[in-house]
Amino acid sequence: MPSTEHAAKQLHSLYSDHHGWLYGWLRRKLGNACDAADLAHDTFLRLFVRRLPGDLGDEPRALLTHIAKGLVIDHWRRQDVERAWLDTLASVAPSEVPSAEAQVLILDVLYRIEAVLRDLPPRTCEIFLLSQLEGLTYQRIAERMDVSLITVKRHMRTAFAACLALR
Amino acid sequence: MKTSHAPGADLDQAILLEAADWMVLMQSGEASDSDHAQLERWQAISPDHEEAWRRAEELLGALDRVPGKLARGALSRLPSPERRQILRLGLLLLAAPTASWLALRHTPWREWSADLRTATGEQRTLDLADGTRLVLNTASAVNVSLTASERRLTLLTGEILITTGSDPSPMSRPFIVQTSHGTLRALGTRFSARRLENATRAAVFEGRWRCARPTRGKSPYSMPANNSPFRRRPSRQCGPWMPAPPCGRAACCWSATCRWANCWPNWGATIVVFCAATRRLPDSLSPAPSR
Image (cartoon, rainbow over all chains, first blue to last red):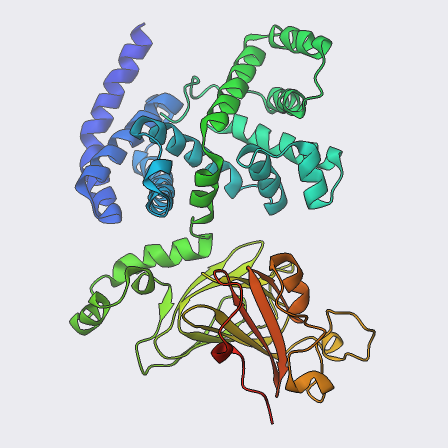
């Protein structure tokens, strides 16, 4: 479609105008050229996916910085999760360490859980973890936390809905 | 990259909540055949419904494949928001003086990566964000984690003295001291914890007044007052060496999670010694009888 072509052209000119300073800004923030290049790329990608460059307004810098800031915070959070995961692996017997490809899947789930739990009340988090990671039935959780079964279900519903809403 | 659904077009919150309801029902083990049939009809309502359930199944499948114990371990290691901020700021302080680098080289990594530490011969007093005053004795290291639900100090080595402040948090957050020997939940307002080789020794100097008077009922939870007849030997109220669950009861002002704990009312303090590894502690770890 011609409009897509137009948008792609616009994105291209946006990229050549703004990639330089954005990369520099990210590099200063992250102290790492590789990560900065990745995140600069992701910033434009997100811009392209989320909205057409047509409605960027006069000052695309503000929007680009805003998107990049969010990505930097995500990046740091993922680093925290990765570090926590590696620390955990370092503390278990070698036979317990999952295979490399299993680890990729696990890390992905951990990123998601971390992102969801961050915004949930502590009790909801606890119930969610007891159910999903410790494998307790709702009934057992209700007994253990001394709440009604319906309360456990309500917390689980909140947590599941938050997981599903995660982008 | 994280999830495979079409980005941008996000699903209606109402549909997500309905999908979450279905997930709860399916996981509860209470779903009947007719529930399953109804779920299928629900998915057929619209492509969005179908997409919501696809996400739900993907999520449940992914959670199922995760080894729970390891995942839980990793999540519990995540820094709290406050600590994250400190860690981020910490990047600016990387250019540490050479002298401290030399000192650090000879310290086990867990200690030098601690949030707070003192060198041999150094004492430090700090005020934490919750109003707690923390004194680190010589050669001590402690990790601080203040979250919305708890205040936790992990004592890695050495000794700390804590005077809890009036916590500004709207929720009452338990104060927890953790060592490799166990976990203590403090009810006192002023207490110390010292890591020994095989055990951790804690002393409570000020507890709740209500707990400090044995005359107020014969509850085993009450802490004997200083002039208690139990002062000179291990208190009956504290019980003999006891395994983990009852030791919370033994430690008058503390609830401890550990294998063995015992508690003595001592001159001016109640001493709790606890450990995870041994069945009982060497006598040398018992507090000296008070005069």
